[in-house]
Length: 165
Image (cartoon, rainbow, N blue to C red; front, top):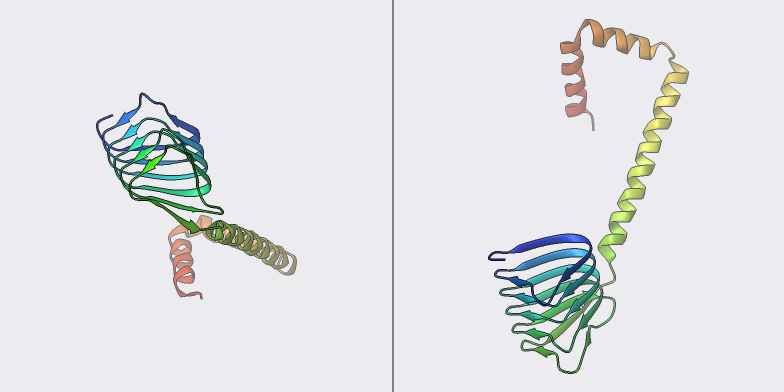
């Protein structure tokens, strides 16, 4: 392949015959690099195996990084993960291997935002149910207004959206 490669999937394998003329960006559950990358490699994966040639720097974020005995990296390898990379005898990393401890704090934060969004939605559903119980004719009035004056309803909705805190 002449240019850059952007790959994503559950399991990605660049076999020994693969030759990427530019950089590689890959994300997956498992990424195996056994071929050649002419520039850089940026990988996010649960498990990563580098056992090929990269002519530039390699950045990996994920669970595990194994650098195999056939690996040749002309630049540096930076690994962000829960434990240091495993480097096999015979592996050549010219710029060295740098480990940055990372436990997926951002993932936990995003999960927390998902829970907060769910609670926010449930709160609005409850508020809607209370309004319907207190004012049962409300939906009829709103529906009639929407049918009779759709432009007015759209304008009123936009004003409430903009002006409400």
